[in-house]
Length: 110
Image (tube, rainbow, N blue to C red):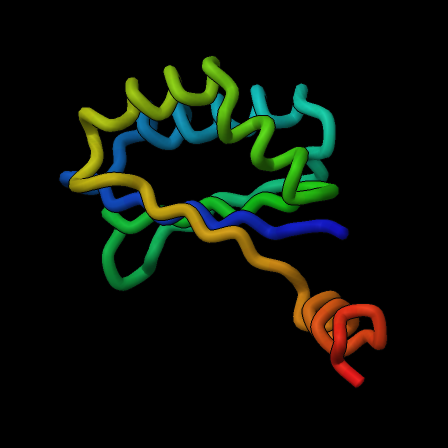
């Protein structure tokens, strides 16, 4: 079951092109990982210091493997100097998947 991963970052100032390139480098490396499907980067219209990355993975396990990867941790550490606080990561699933899992007979929903 696929998962969507939302990563929220707040930069100390408006992100420079090199900051957005660093995020793009995350995507380039993620694309090389098993289970990566796609990703997009968004900059808030109200506050350009807020940057969101939404990626889609084939499973939570594939995402967790990338999350724990030493290479990813190094990239995150390099970016930390430009951020106002830690990145916030949320792993989401489609509502239909939740309903199917939560209310199936096997899960005790009936």
